[in-house]
Image: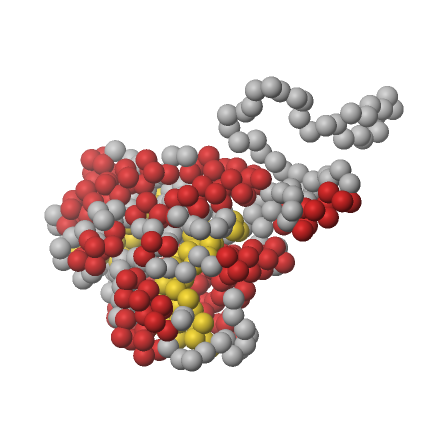
Length: 395
Ligand SMILES: *Cc1c(COP(=O)(O)O)cnc(C)c1O
C-alpha cells in the first residue's frame, strides 16, 4: 500500500490477507482489474489465462450466479447473466438473427417479448409469426426456409396453457430450427429445458430464482458452444451486463430457491382447490387440475411441480375486481411474480390492457380474471384471505 501523509487518494490493496476464507461470496464492485504486465493481459484476452479485465466483459459475482443456474439447468457451457430477463430475450432475438430471417413465437409470450417480436424485429427486417405452441402442426405450418428459431414459454401467462415442448423439440431437430425456451415460470426445479431438447434456455432471474423482488436480472445459455459465445459477445457489446450487487443479491436469494419453490407450488395447489370450492368463483386454472385443458401434458412434462401460479375468474365487472384487490388484505396487488409474498395481478388492467375487451374475452380474460403468484405464507391463512376478498367482491 502507498501511504501519503497529505491525504491524497492512493488505493490500498483491496483486502487484507487472511489464511481462512469468507463463507459468503464477497461482493466485487470493481469495474476494472489490474494485470501485472502487458504479457499477462495479452494472455487473458487470448483466453490462455483466466482473469477479469473490465466488468462489462464479466465479473466474479455474475459468474457465481451463472454457474449456480448452469448446475440447475444442466447447461453444458457457462451461461450469460444479463441485466434483466428482457436483456436475455433481446440477446437471443437481436443477437442471433439478421435481416431476412424469420422467427416463430408462442402467441401467449410475456408481453414485452411479444412486443419485441411484433414491433422491433419486423422494423429490423426480421419477419415473425405468432403461433399456439401447444399445436405442433400449426408451428410446422409456420416454418419457412429462412426460419431461424422458435421462442416459447413452457407455461403461458396468465392462462397457464402448457406448450408441447416434446413435439416442438422433435420438430426443431427435424427442421434445423433452434428451440428457445423461456423457463421463467417453470424454473429448473419444475422443468429442465435442455433435458427436453431445448437449444437455448432463458430466465428472468428477477422472478422465482432471485425471489425477493429486489433484483432485476436475466440468464441465457445455449447448448452449442459457438452460439453460447455469440450470446456472450452480444451482451458485452450492447452493455447488457448486470451489476455485481444485483448478482450478489440474486445469489443470496437462490440459496433458498428450492425450498421456496417447493413450498410455493404446494401452497398453490392447496389454494387452487380452495378457490374452486368458493361461492362466486367461476373457474380456476391450475395445471394439476383435471379440468385444465393441458392437464395430461402438464403431468408428463412437469413431474408434479406445477409451478406457483394460479389463475381464477370471478363474476363481475371492474368494480368487483377493485373490491377483490382492496379486500385481499396483506397481499400486494402488483404486476410481478415469484416474490416471497403472494402477489395478485389483473391482466385486463395491466399485461393485457392494450387488447380490446373482445380480444381479451376470446383469450378468457374478463374483468373478473386474476392471476396469483403464490408466496410463502401459511397456506390456511392465505386461503382465508382469498375467501374474504372474494366475498367482498361477489357477496
Ligand atoms: C418477467 C418475465 C420476463 C422479463 O424479465 P425481466 O427480468 O422483467 O426483464 C421474460 N419472460 C417471462 C416469462 C417473464 O415472466
